Length: 201
Ligand code: MN
Image (tube, rainbow, N blue to C red; front, side, top):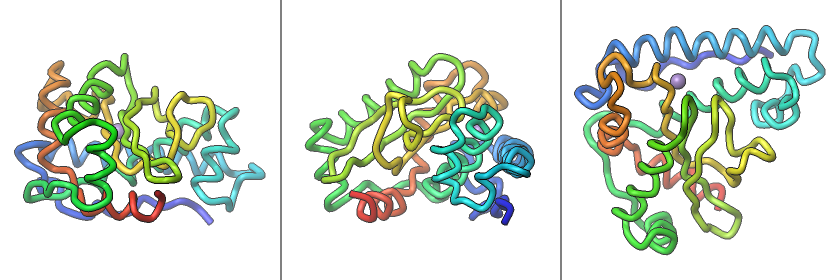
């Protein structure tokens, strides 16, 4: 079975003014579509064909086309899912407790997350991951790598991620990556992030 590009769960302009419609359209319909198509092409005649995306990412790490496009496919699915129009809601319950335990406060978490996203040199992602037992951790990876991949210095199950490739912000923010990161906090779908936390803690 081939991997399919799911429709964006909201309109291209739904995250305005924080993320502009043109960026969303190109990001989803061109970039994410290309990762999906290229992943399917890379999996043709591969023993990994038919496996889950999580298995593909881990077991295909030594093959650049599978690693890069498998990560690109998964990471963008997560990215669309953990954003929502209409402003954000703060985390609550167990996730909030875990964030406060790890970072002192929501502001402490935001600083750590923004720092990871800002200081990722070149292209990549910053993550909030949960480890078994419920502890959360901020980390970042290069390119389309993902915390599932062994040896990327970032482990656990990713519950929140921000794409800091220039294609994610350059049309609107140009070189101002920190402004894009600040804006991202306004569109986080914390109920989705909590769901991912609760299901994988
Ligand atoms: Mn991207």
